[in-house]
Length: 499
Image (tube, rainbow, N blue to C red; front, side, top):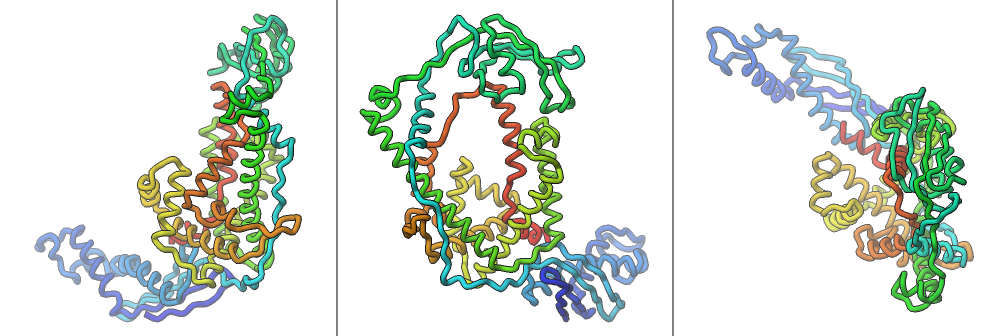
């Protein structure tokens, strides 16, 4: 086999491959073997038909066509290895010569990872925000804790913002009650605005057994966008009573004896969370700095394939959520489909560039991935997805995502090593201790990372338990938004794996 490579652009090449006839013996053997099992010829036992008879029976051109189909993928893969081409898409193959008994020649055009000229990596520096915890932030966290211990008591008055009401709802369109358009005994916080437009104005001022009617646009279903008429009936009104902020509350809500001790613990946890955020800032700023300093071409076909995949995935998410595009844009605060497509394209292109950048850095620094790296990442991802490491590993294998996973671990390791060598300072000029950031930026499988993340979660905002209807609506929107924000850092690897 002889092969030459021609650069068609920074991310595309053409391989010209010529195969002598003798190198096709294996392909001929496979084709004739298949034909013997398929073709029945009088006078010959099954599987014993001579090659020349098969040529006559099937036709020599048909045999040659099948030989080409068998030979090209194997020969192409060998040429890719010999020329050390990092392909990221499926090839476009064209047979240029097929001379029976002499040779086979074909070309294969394919997208490849670009060769990058990296900036200097030995004197990098980034600046992150200061770790500063304000009294207002502490007050907010304590208020969240206070909300958890609030009690509800019935009142004989009209509903006000902050009250909880038990309501019945019935939605009609053109005088007919909508399917699943009625409910009874729903708990709702007046003024929260998280159920449907117009409900707060209708309920506010109603006492028990009071009724009001209003119109609201339907956000999902076959009639999404149309105005429905909704009748709401208040069955009861309950006021929320918060506990006093004192030492007794601290004892009830925590392991501390005084409110001052509780507030100091909240301050410590918030500070730790912000230290972890410094790690994420340092990582993101380092990547952004390298992207700006590096010329990175992007294969247009790869971007288009990823955009198509994301659009189809989004369609499925919206259908499952019972929403259409307009309802999603309204819920997500997006102006139009054009704005959505432009932002999605920008995100895809940036993700592909980041992948190429980190792959180039890993190559330049000869970063390798060992079993320890893979095991740590499997354990971390399994814990994040609330499954056992064995289940997560099996999921990777069944989904054909092993290559993507290994490539992503290698990129993460390369970035972590580079970040360790980067000078990180906060806005006040203080050098940031990278060891404090390690759980977020380096050791993905470190137990410390899990401990820090769990502690950070404990000081995140939490709302009152929502009603079933609120959960359904919020989850529907969140599912669609999550689909739109999905990371595409392994887009190129997907295409290469398919090739």
